[in-house]
Image 1 (cartoon, helix red, strand yellow):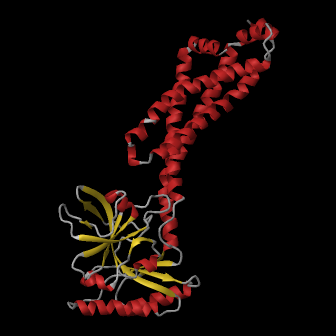
Image 2 (tube, helix red, strand yellow; image 1 turned 135 degrees about the vertical axis):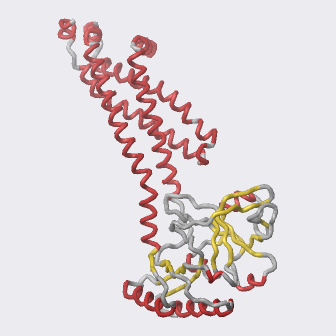
Image 3 (cartoon, one colour; image 1 turned 135 degrees about the horizontal axis):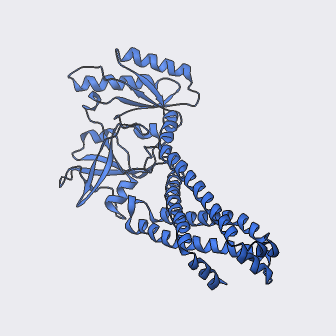
Length: 393
């Protein structure tokens, strides 16, 4: 039976080649869609790495002008204590502008021996971990004793640890941000933060402790509030900040809202790809359905003869469906050959498992599409009466 089907397919190889080409293109597009979907899903199911609930971001302009570093530090420490004294405030932290879920970025290389890894650089204070609820995996967080440390301490994410040290120990190792200048000591490792939303992976990151002059250029404040903090308290917080920092442009953002907008922005490529793939699948389905319908009308004599010599309607229907599935299989063999090159060549630096899962889902999808499109034409072929078909011939 299989040999007979291959003969029938070969006898109409030109017509079947076009049909196989449609299936091949559909498979490659669906493969790209499923790769993106699996990639997003794998990122989404991982933890954010920080607590965005009840976390507010205060944007401000540094308006306190003084040449005295001590006066500058005292000014902002008093501001921190004033805000933290409010009943609805749990923690206050000053940090650089590139807070998670924002469009600001500060990137540079982190080097260890001959390894250089592009990383996000964050400047934070001692209270940043409590405000963000970061998960410390190894070592410790910054403290006041680090201000007098001879070797500048840094904290890295677990992604950067894996990239720089592999399975080795990270604590106590000397790294650098300039080639052949390893003057930073790793004192802690934290769980990676998905700083670009739920659908993006946690990036490699390195955290610096603010120094005596950092307050001159810092412009962000992380405020951890209690769940009962409402709009009335937000207005009170704004008024307190405005009275303390005269002529400063102050804006309060909720991290929950920033997460929603960031996720929506990240989903745009997925939505566009799904729309393109949807119309392509519809066109392929209609084309496949039309070709099979056309084949039935062209092969009425053959079908009538098979029915006349004793073939059942079920066997005729199964033959047409089997021909379609064989064509799909031939197309998928070629498509799989191209798809398997992505994990082998490490294209786009994605894990091989993402490509493999996407490939399996794409194969299942194409088989289901071909099966659905061939069932009704096969049913119509089974309903052809032998006498009518032979009479028309």
